Amino acid sequence: MKTATLEASRSVPRISLSRSEVAQAIGVCGNTVDLMVEEGFLPPPRCWHKRKVWLISDVQAAMQAWPEDDSARKMDIDGDDWSMSV
Image (cartoon, rainbow, N blue to C red):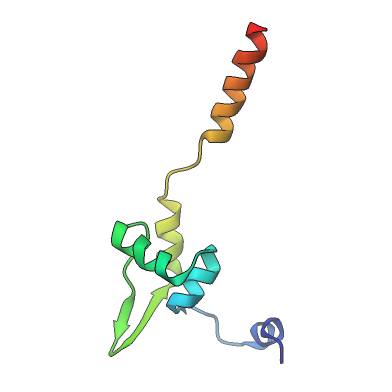
């Protein structure tokens, strides 16, 4: 059974992710997840005995607080300034 098919047939909604699932979900490696937790960009995991998981809602809330990338807007402004000066 493929993963997509397994996810589609799952009747219980996911509320948490493992470290590797968090890494895959945001497109980084596991070591980067650890660094992001250390730097405060991601929340620390929830723990039960030795099991560590991240609540999906915690990860989403943390990412919502990240600064937006204004480089595209700045490039557009800079581009307009450049074209006006030519």
